[in-house]
Length: 484
Image 1 (cartoon, one colour):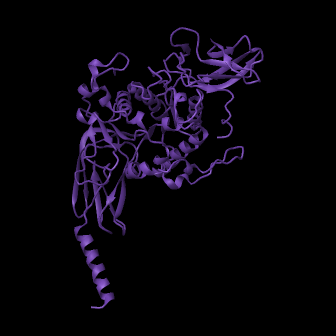
Image 2 (cartoon, one colour; image 1 turned 90 degrees about the vertical axis):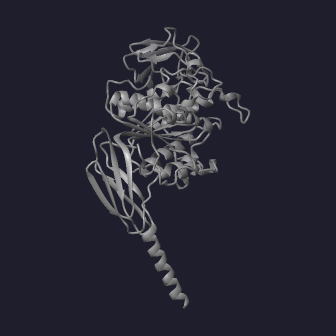
Image 3 (tube, one colour; image 1 turned 90 degrees about the horizontal axis):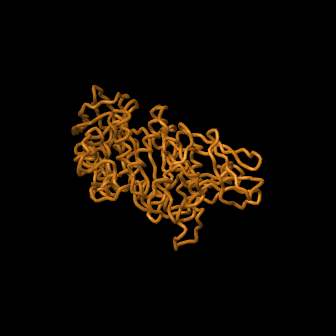
């Protein structure tokens, strides 16, 4: 037998065996108990033998496609209305897969580092938790809503599996390791929408933002509006794309409503600000592109007060955290983004992990209810700086998101305001509520120039709107606002 004939027979055998024995396989995210996104085309995909015909049947729909020459296939189901009826999905090729107990509703992806990963098991000793550290209900033992479904995206776990057991109902044991923020978001959102809710949690403690971004997307030199060019972003971390490749890419293109993000502590320890803002911008834009949804909602949490300045790794000041908050807030320039401030949710600024994740989840739910689901009567944010006006020896500050009015949480004078003249020397200021604006002044500053609020890593101000949501820290002399 000559060599060419041998190669021909070998290739023929390989083709025969691949078509004969290859079976349809599904990504881990497609499994029993999952929630499919309502009112959007729903992506279903997997692998099979090259050129194999695939049929998917669900809720009266039958869709067919043919795997490409590498065995990859995908199709989309027509948009569906929310449904509490558990239904089966059948995927048929050379083999048949039946996925059971599927609902249709709202699906959100939650990602970030330890504060997003923070699991409900932290509340397992519910009866002995101190007041303020105890959730309103003992959900680990009392949760009973089978219409909330959860998927925990674990590292080294996302390879296709023949069991298809990716999703769980948010009842009992599966909740123990699941993100508290994600669960409480779902719980509150369900109470507002009354449709099934599916949550995907993909978070890694201590992770920086670079591992969550595809390496090629960071091959950029961000150009500021003033023409200045930052150094390439990829140089900041050697693990670029690490978690994207293993935890995010396997989820794409599972149909989502939106994304929640809670991350940044690792970068605040590094003293980052504008560079983080550009990395965050890259992540948002690249993930939206991956999911082919330029308008996908992306809501995030401003990290909590913490005494970063005592770190021994590098010299940091008490203003590094406010500068990071400012960098996070720059992302509000992108459409369909919003943030929640949690400056009031810290019992101890030496604790990097605020315990009351139920309130953080609720605040994210307020964002979604108002901005994604059109419930305009819901106030979703505390006061946000809009503009300033110098009036004689004071500065008048106007805010958006004032709700039903500006207020003091404890009835005492507003705290953590400071004011400066043209010399930039800030002094503690008197801040008064007048006509739903804040008037800021100080006796020693007769010609005021700028104001700062909450400009310290320890700042936990009493300045709120009457809905109880805290004002977002700001400085009127933001050096980045016109550059981003």
